[in-house]
Structure formats: structure tokens, C-alpha cells
Image 1 (cartoon, rainbow, N blue to C red):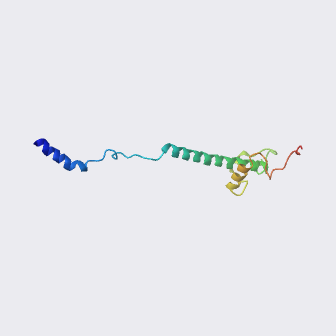
Image 2 (cartoon, rainbow, N blue to C red):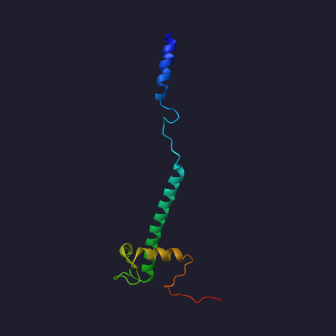
Image 3 (cartoon, one colour):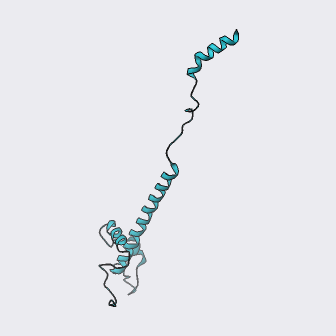
Amino acid sequence: MSKDVEREVLKMYDGSRPNEDELFETSNVNHIAWSLAVLFAGIAVWLAIALVNAENQRYALMTNKCADPVFKGEVDKKCLVTVHSREHWWEHLWVGATHVRGRYDEEPSRYARKK
């Protein structure tokens, strides 16, 4: 008889037991894909910053903005670090990204084109 009473008590409290399928949190988000997306976005931003700096220095050298005042024909390397050769950083990014083949509108041609 004690088993019947115990069975009745267990039936009564069976609904209050936690569902073991939902006991632990699970995530449906693909963490590897999102991590790779954030990583590639960070690399793209880092490369854009490097391109802006390289184009800034290239244009400063081309327009002779960092000529050394003491030694003629030399370059002031401290000037290259701090020079702002164009008005905005996005101009460097645009010129650096669109002029991939090495042809620049502002650069005079040294040699005549062979036809």
C-alpha cells in the first residue's frame, strides 16, 4: 500500500519537474560564421587605414611636400609621418582604391607612350 501512496504523490508532483530537454540553454547562432565576419571586417578596416596612409605618403612625395630644407633632393622622413597631402582621408582611400593600375590623373607622365 505504501507503494500506491508513493505513486500517487509522484503523479501529483510530476508536472513540477523541470523539462530536461529545455534545462540547458542552447544557441542557434552560428558563432564561427559571425566570428569570421567580424574578423574579415576588422581586416578590411585595417587594410583601408594602411591604404590611406600609403596614398597620403605617396601623394606627398609626388607633390614634393616633404622636401628636406637642408639637403636638397632628399626627403624629410619626420614630415612623411605627419603630412596631410589632401583635405580628407576618404580622398586618399578613393584614389588608392580606384587607381589600381598605377595611372594617376595628377601625376605627370615621364615617358611618352609607345604605340
